[in-house]
Amino acid sequence: VKQIMLGPGQTINALITTDQQIGRYSMSMGPYMSAKNVSFQNISSIGYIQYSGFSPNTLPLISPLPRFNDTLTIKTVMDGLRSLGPVDVPKDIDTNLFITVGLNVQKCTSSMP
Image 1 (cartoon, helix red, strand yellow):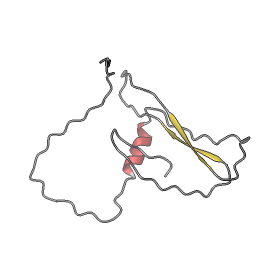
Image 2: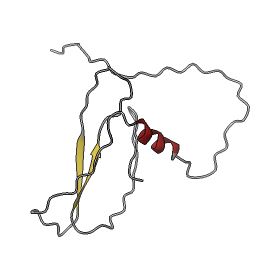
Image 3: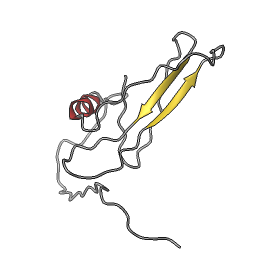
Image 4: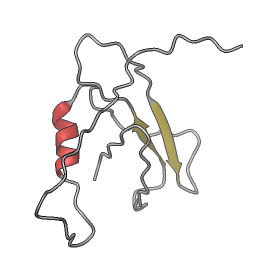
């Protein structure tokens, strides 16, 4: 898997395989926002995995980020999610649910002392 998607408040445990040549490799993180004409915090982050024996004079391999509105990438990641084993889910639905989703796209304007 080359990409993982997390929603607000989600965490994930990811096992990575360190079988590359000695060097420094990066993991990048960036926002996803499909809404048009909505401002959001477009902040990216990069973390590094560095092998023992790495030469500090070598440039790290930077992992590219998808565009912030790359819906196809997000759909591909989400469609690939599978359970670790068989899951027994209810087949008869007898309860209606009302679900709301907060997009958190408005800036907080409160000032703290």
